[in-house]
Amino acid sequence: MSGFKDEKTLTTIPELHKDLPGPPNKDHDLKLVKAEEEILQHYKDFAYFCNFDCKDHPDWGKKFYDLDEAMYFDLMGSVQRPGFRPHYDNITPYLADAQIAFKDLEITAVTETFGYATALQRYWGVAADGNAFDFTFRTTSLVRKRGDGNWKYIHEHFSFPVNMATQKADLTSGLKIEENIRLE
Image (cartoon, rainbow, N blue to C red; front, side):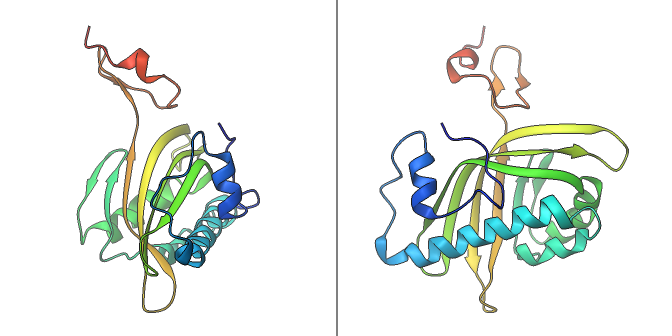
């Protein structure tokens, strides 16, 4: 498996494919490579924002989202449209002093204006109340290229694996499926 990557080490779509733990999915269309590279640039810019700008300028991150259309299955609960804007205004300043990195990021363009990405995401830092956090979770993101030419998150789903026997989430995503599958 690949290591975690940030804005400097998320390089190109072919390089991301080389780092996947298995082959890329069969839905990649060579005619849409430009769109996939644009979505990758969205991820690089978002990572830069999280790693360098968010602490002092959390509002700058709003440009990465369609704030009125975004729907979230966030780690702490669901956010239905049109409720993402107030969620962003609450959660982003709270977790602004943080770093972000992605592992096994696979970006798939479906059309020239719509795509999705899957990855493991690590997000760590110190919350506004002084509590340290370090989460590694699965993420599936849907992105849409809007009229201004920019890609925006329109849906994200974050999740942790759960040990079925203990009913406890694994906040590091380190347990293997074989360790979590039994109810006893």
